Length: 179
Image (cartoon, rainbow, N blue to C red; front, side, top):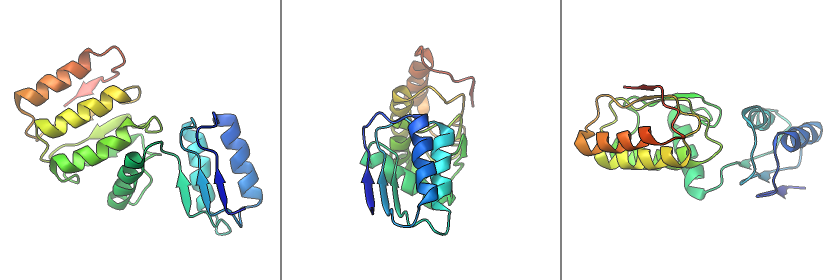
C-alpha cells in the first residue's frame, strides 16, 4: 500500500499509537498518509514524525492539519525553522516573520486544532493592527494552549491593542503573560 487516507475518521490517541506501531513494523511501502481532521495528542504526532526519520520509511507526505492554508503555513514555518512546528510548545519568531503578510500566513497554523503552542514570541516582526487582527482572530479560533505572547516592538497602535483586549476578555483565553 502506497497511500492511506484516514481523514475525518475520529481517530484519537489509541488509534494513532496503533497506526504508528503497525507502520513501524512494516514501513517500506507507504508514501502518503492523510490523517487530517482527527485528534492526535502531542505524543501521537511525535510518534508519527519519528517514524518519518526511520531510514526504511518511505513516507513522503504526512497530512495532519485540516485546512490547506494550515498545511502551507506549517511548510512556511518549517522552511524558516527547519523543525516541525507542530511539535513546538514555544515558538520564537522574533524578527523572522516579514510583517502583516507573514503573520497572516502563520495564523492559519494557529487556527488549526493540532497547534499546541504555549509561548509565542512575535517581537519586532513589523506587525501593524492589520496583522494583529489576523492574530487575534486565529487565537480566538484556537485559544486553549497559548499562555505567553510577546508582541513588543511592533506597530499595533490603538486598534491593535483594542483587538488584543477583546481576546483577553474571552472566557477561553488562557494568556497569563502579554508583552
